[in-house]
Length: 184
Image (cartoon, rainbow, N blue to C red; front, side, top):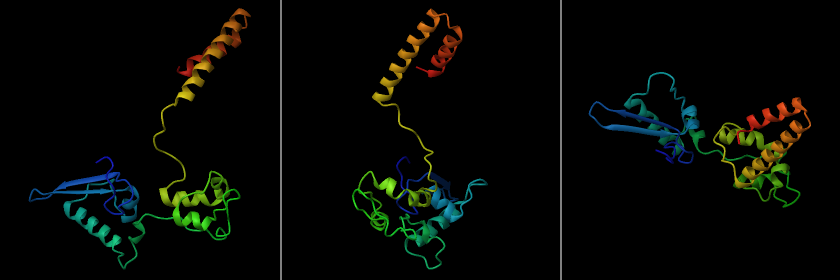
């Protein structure tokens, strides 16, 4: 299931996996993203959906991908950035990329584009990801961070030894507490 794409939008990772066994013994599975579930109005807090409900959801998703006329679910397709009002003339001072070109291909031209388009990025990212704040996993410490922590700890240990030698016990206690909380 890891790495499975949403069966509705076909672009986002599936984070909701529904499996039901029909009365004839056949297994019905549905793998959808949380955004697709939200846009379909799928309530997962109560009883799990029946096999027929899962099939209905699959049909709704297929209709959305085919451009269903009711317009209700067609917004499930992966969103793209849109040029905000007045943003069409906004451009990056370093690479010259204009916001409308960025909105079209969702790619920056250089690192300065982040600052140049900052005021338009928050709402755009919230539309695409459902939030403009990272809530997922964080990477492990890299070698530079680990080395920095070792140097910091050695510096604190030196300061602790000096504080004890100078009989500055309050400072020594504060440094000791820092070392305890350091976790290294």
